[in-house]
Length: 207
Image (cartoon, rainbow, N blue to C red):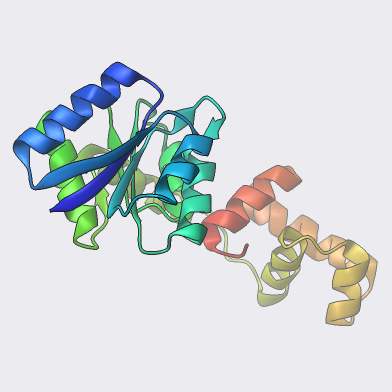
């Protein structure tokens, strides 16, 4: 029996999910929460195999909650059930440690398939989202000009929070040279701001 916790702020939605999962599969819902705070408190008290998280919650995002749960309960499998199909949400949840992402527009059987898959230790994306994500990754790879080793090193250190001065000292080069490598690297990647650099660094696993 797969023990599931539902984290969704709408009571009627939780009720429907409970009925769907328990009626169709080897699933028992062992707890429900309507917020990030309630979810953290609940999971300290119950044993669960899978947590189904809404991406939008009253006191935070499912992505931030996913990261906290991954740190606190490393064996718990995390599945997003969201109305958001933007790839930034999908990537954010997976990068935060989630194992699967399902749209609320999905058919009933797909949600159960996703729960069974993540409970087995697999990852799950519905086919349409998986195809879009793959195409986006291919597009980004094709657009990126290759960074030189030094450009990548400078951008990686800057993304990790080091100042130009600290990077210069660490690499034994001048601050002016750091700025030059930064500008070249940002131009190659098509990045225009620090926030864009941080998002790129997160996707690449630099931070």
